[in-house]
Structure formats: C-alpha cells, structure tokens
Amino acid sequence: MSAISKPRYSSMHAGDLSPVRRRLGLINYVRDTKEENVKRKWYMFRAVGKFYVQDKRPQTRVRYQKKTDKVDGWIWDVIKERIDNRALKAASPYKGNVSI
Image (cartoon, rainbow, N blue to C red; front, side, top):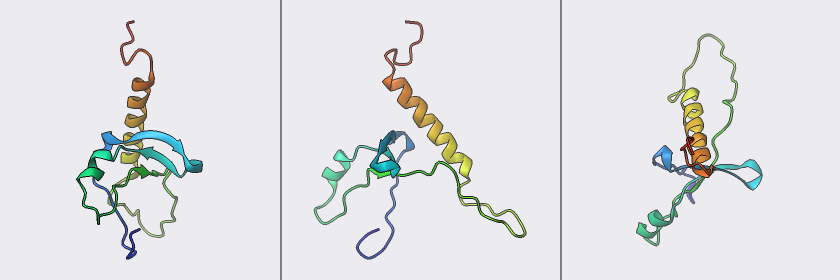
C-alpha cells in the first residue's frame, strides 16, 4: 500500500522472479531491483522486489454458477513450476547438461 492507501502493483516478466524462503513464509519470490531503483526519481517509491504468491487458491462457495477470475489459478501453478525448474537447473552442478 502506498501512503494514500492506493495498492501498489508491479509489471514485470515472470522470468525475473526467483524462489526463496524468507520472513516466516511471507516472501516466496524475489527479483533484483537495483537497476530499476537507480533509474527512478528520488520522490518515487522504490521498486517492489519481494512477493508472495499463494500456494493454493482460496476455496469459495459458489451458489448458482461457476465464477471465473480474470486470471485462472492454473496459470500461477504453471509459472511457479517453471520458475522452480529454472532455479533447480541453475543450482545444480551440471547446469542442465546431464551428459557430464
């Protein structure tokens, strides 16, 4: 939230995120914001670099018909899976080359 209670949002590539475990589970993805913060004016808020993406969608009761969100939940599952796979390849000693 900003000072005037307006929610802040971030537009970025999902590939910029990397998985982490911080702040008792309140942060599960981070991105590097150094270059973006250098370009911002002094009076602008710093770029958001810490995110929390829920593991499971909250279950809601549907009374009459199925309600759809603007973004379906399965999209985040696919994004999280790809980010995790990329992080595993970067952390492995083989760096994605299994033939070694």
